Amino acid sequence: MQDIIHTWRTVPRSRLLVLPALLLLASPLLTAPSGAATAAPTYREYPSPIGADVTVGLPIPPELGSQPFVPDEQHGLADRAGEPTVGINPKTGNVMFFAKQQTLRVNGFDSKGPGSSVWADATDQIEGLQTSDPILHTDLDTGRTFINQLLVTGCSLQAFTDDDGKTYTRSPQGCGPGIAFDHQTLVTGKRTEGSAMPPTVGYPNYLYYCTNDVAQAACATSIDGGLTFLPAIPVYTLADSDCSGIFGHIKTSPTDGTLYLMPDGCGKVQGVWRSDDNAVTWTFHPIPGSTVGAGGHPSISVGRDGTLYATWSSTLSSTSEGPLQVAVSTSRGDTWTKPVAVGVDKGVLYTSFPLIAAGDGDRAVAAYLGATEEGNPRNEAQYTGVWRLYVSTTYDRGRTWQTVVATPKSPIQVGSICTGGLSCGTDRNLLDFNDMDVDLRTGYPVIGLADGCLKVTGCTKVDRLDKGLIVRQVSGQSLLRSAAPVAAPVPAAPRQPATAPTPTPSAPASGNLPATGLGTALPVVGLLLLLGAAWAARRRVTR
Image (cartoon, rainbow, N blue to C red; front, side, top):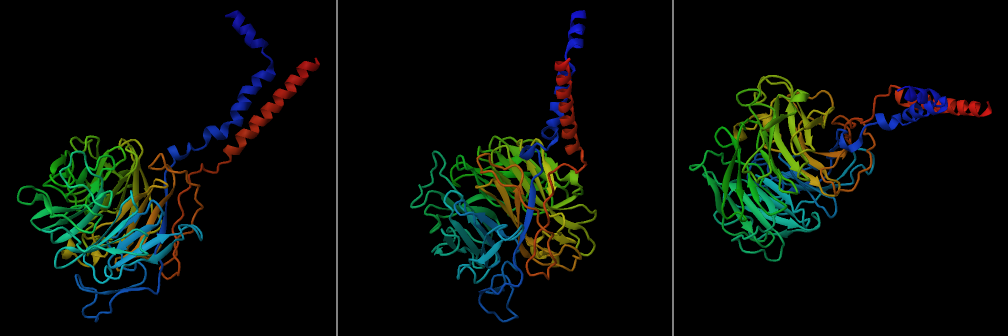
């Protein structure tokens, strides 16, 4: 022990000063944020233009215009954008935005400054004549976008484009024989192993078209890229199940072609219908511990490794309302994790329009409208809460979730949001859902929604707009490890009031450390210690 003490005492003071000096010089590296692995993702708003001189559809007498199931004329760019659907062409990066009668091609994000974008009308002439339920789907394997408009007579009008709306091919048959009524949804997917479905012809993937047929949910399959459909096959009937006839968007697994359809609740729980043979047969898989809230259609998504994510509005705040719940399955729905509530750390009490999108199997993002004020969020006369877009992200297969307010300075709606269909009043301006997809080039989610306020301040219950809005992730960790790195974004100016010609989004939150001065002070101290060590060493040599 004495030898150790003697050795320590004889170490030159210049060497003793070097280690703390180096540590202090490295302090910016030790105290800086750990980057994409831990920094909260940031989002930016891209509002559709105001006052655009664009018209789609046919001139209709005022007493007949704006009625369901009849031809109509629509003005502007995404001026009527309730329940939009979006798709992203992986070849071009163009976002296809579809709502009411209008199809839009959106690109040029941030090209003329943060929050800028270019919205162009890309409506097919026939598809733009009328609307009841519009739906869009972009095949991520081919870039083909399908546009589908429900007809009051049953079936649908359908067209597809391989060049982002510059040209269209109209489908002679917009649905499958035996399918009829309401709330259609589309998805493409690969052939499953051992499937009894006929193989595809002239197109690599199947296209599925599913609807609510009052007494049952049914799906029809196209084997020729959307030109025609085979006869419809029931998924479930209301008589033989406790499930709602309404459901969220159908999804397919990128790994093996498995199909998933999630109703708006099955009795008192949530569950998923699964097909292992390209919509020929279906089996039901309940989610234990789930609840059925009044916040709109549930949502499902499948990661690149087949991990299944499901999300829905819960009843954790009242008998029919609550924050978003999420459950995860790595067994194609046979077993599930215990549902967890997200957004509660931000004070979210009520949610509307749940969405989820997965990238790699352990990475997913849930997006939803959330309100923090107490009351009945469906009561048009009394509720005065503020709804904003929230986004919750997991990078560990749902074990933990990180929530941010994606529109912190821009309310989406003030007052109630009705999800009761035709029984609603003026608070159904946003209609029934929003939509979200993942840009395969960046691995960042892109959210399409309708904006009921179009104001930063002064929005009230009287404001009941449905203006098209896109919200994109612009920084933070990607949902896809294979995606190209994204440059840090330039902060955007706050969004302008609705009267401004070119609205701009709110600034993304900063991921930097607080400006305390400590980050620059520590390296200076380290440099002084090094100079002191050098002086001590020089003095020792000269002795």
